[in-house]
Image (cartoon, rainbow over all chains, first blue to last red; front, side, top):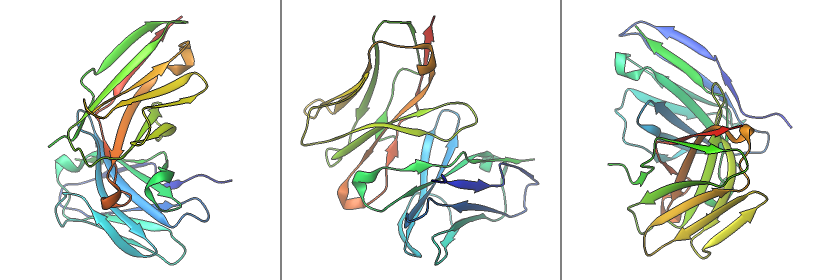
Length: 113
Length: 113
């Protein structure tokens, strides 16, 4: 059974640019969540999509957005990149529902210079 | 505002001994808790979970204890093995917020052979 696939694995962008990250969940999983991991901050929740609808949103500025397609694949977009956006971005999929927890992908390491 | 806290950034334990990782939370509405393990360059991997209706859950060498009155949970690993060396995150959720989990900042466990 294939796991959660995130592309690309590494990305270097310049301040002010925008970036799109991709996540393919485990087959059959309808919920996709995105997290930002930075040193000392742990994992910070960005948003969750379920059946193409944003179901939850964390406390991040509007520069961070996402979407989910009918095949449950999800993309996350960050516009007008800032140096502080440098982080590991993790995607997690779940069948949906609290008790299932998540299966995480390996993440996309974004560096903003 | 960090609703889930892991106050020990690191822990070293001799192989064969018990490892105890601690986690505190502030939100009394949290009713589901998980532990994840993370190796470098990989996404977090689900380890064990516990619902607020229980105070203990075991899975092989891993046991999670929940003390609701103290808003505290702990993960016990017995016996500890060198392969357990990783960063451990605790996470909590409130069923009213759906599939959003709040993560601690992690504890780096080193098991010394």
